[in-house]
Length: 131
Image (cartoon, rainbow, N blue to C red; front, side, top):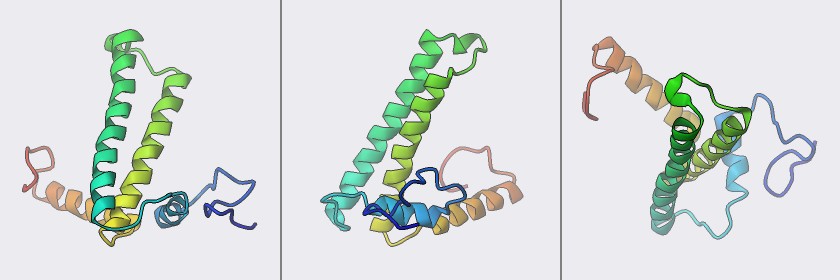
């Protein structure tokens, strides 16, 4: 199936089984006016914080307004809203990784290795970056 200008297969927006790197490449095709470089690194860093804040707002409002404090569960609408914000976060993570010369599979593998090391040293639940 041909790829659209965004790199996404036309007629198949689900792209079941897509790899992180394939997503990163397709998502890069949707960037407009966002060249790799210092300005893009700052922009993506700030955008990540903003998108994370939007995701946190959805969680906060669900907790405050919809009874999650009493053990309730997310409605399907709340799940969809949160999923869409997580997608925005993933887009900026991919863009920022590209800015610093990494692909998403490298970032994911590095994270798993870091967590495995922390678990092996029994510091996975400790505080701070240098555990």
